[in-house]
Length: 103
Image 1 (cartoon, rainbow, N blue to C red):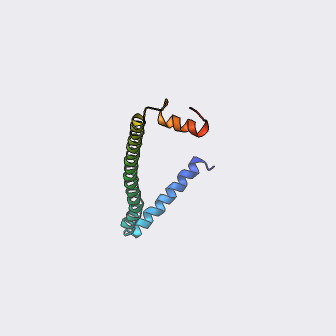
Image 2 (cartoon, one colour):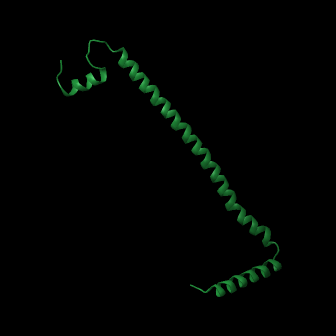
Image 3 (cartoon, rainbow, N blue to C red):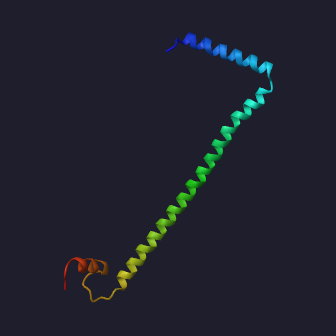
């Protein structure tokens, strides 16, 4: 690793070269700014797109939860309306009939 004094000298030399370059070519200032703005604009656009997609994902998850709740309600309603001649709820009766012979 370079000593801090050497790093400081290298940075100063770089700054001096850049200062000379800009003084000789002032048109580089807007071009450099434009080149730096492009990645910022792309990042901001990506951030907002990701935010919108995250919101859509939350909405879809909520819709899925609501559908699941409705399905559970439909199953419970079906169980309550099954004929009373069985001694156990319909889904348990069906399961037991598949695996055991029960009377």
